[in-house]
Amino acid sequence: MSVIAEETKPLLLSVDGVTVDFDGFKAIDNFSMTLEAGELRILIGPNGAGKSTLCDTIIGRVQAASGKVRFRGHEISGLPEYEIVRRGICRKFQTPGVVPSLSVRDNLALAARRDRRWWRGLGLAVPADERARVEEILEIVGLADRADVLAGELAHGEKQWIEIGMVVATGAELLLLDEPTAGMGPNETARTAQLIHSLVGRHTVLVIDHDMTFVEALGGKVTVMHQGKFLRQGTVEQIRNDPEVAAVYLGRSDH
Ligand SMILES: Nc1ncnc2c1ncn2[C@@H]1O[C@H](COP(=O)(O)OP(=O)(O)O)[C@@H](O)[C@H]1O
Ligand SMILES: [Mg+2]
Image (tube, rainbow, N blue to C red; front, side, top):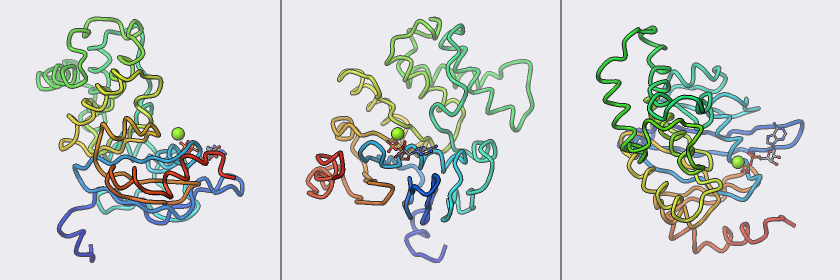
């Protein structure tokens, strides 16, 4: 807390010099980034850059060989995943996935209750505030008119939205969304950008993607990762016009 910037804008997450080593291959190489509370950050980089591994490291599924991850000023690197989740970080796909035989509404209610269990024990009745929250999330993710449909019958895009809804329902402060537009067409992608926008403020959101169209629709600050290393950070505009970022994206094979 000695840095002035930290005093004026509280850091929610700080990744400090993290290296992840898979049998001698550095999937993440001395990587650092910070997130302020309430911000929307987009992490981009070509396939294999280390983005998903970074998510795994933040959530405690992969251990860093060196470096530290701090959440609300407390070190979380080395903690088990359930403890990191309990502290308020949720990764899409980290929760057990959607239950196909349950309705959209019941899936969201289940996700909301899973969080409550940590601190209140399993109650028999669903409290009114929790029920209201589920209805609110149905609206946020645009599935209110699909609430009674079985999750297994949803279209591909809708399945992504319910997964995002389940992450939101856990009440986590920091949401890690790894490629939320995977397999979506342009309309669904645009709607996903809107959805994510509506989460910002209440949550801090780290979105991973490599689709520049989506990144432009999202706006916000962009961090670029390449071969496990920090490459660049800036606005969408700055990143779009950065020759080194363009070179990395065009030279995907990295010769
Ligand atoms: N469990 C693992 N063991 C070995 N190598 C891995 C493992 N997970 C990921 N990698 C490698 O680490 C690099 C980064 O992968 P990943 O984080 O999935 O990249 P991205 O999400 O940016 O596409 C890739 O070269 C990938 O093959
Ligand atoms: Mg990935």
